[in-house]
Image (tube, rainbow, N blue to C red; front, side):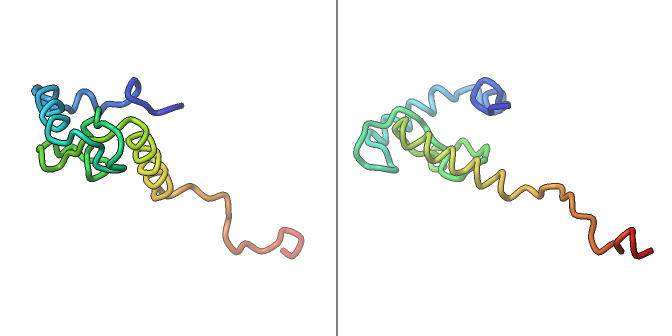
Length: 97
């Protein structure tokens, strides 16, 4: 299943004044704080996967940079999760029992 804004619980965890904070970040950081080229249109959490919505924990980002940053963070989170293994360890071969 794809994880995106529509399937995420992130929206429900945003503070009631999120739009006000988002606007303040974009007004403060007119240019993307990742590439320093394009106009910032997104209020991005500097620390990945956090619910710290203070203004100093947010940065303005353009859409392309935000997409790349989010994809990298999601990949790192997936890689950090332990995966179940199918290896059964050092069992004796059934023919040698």
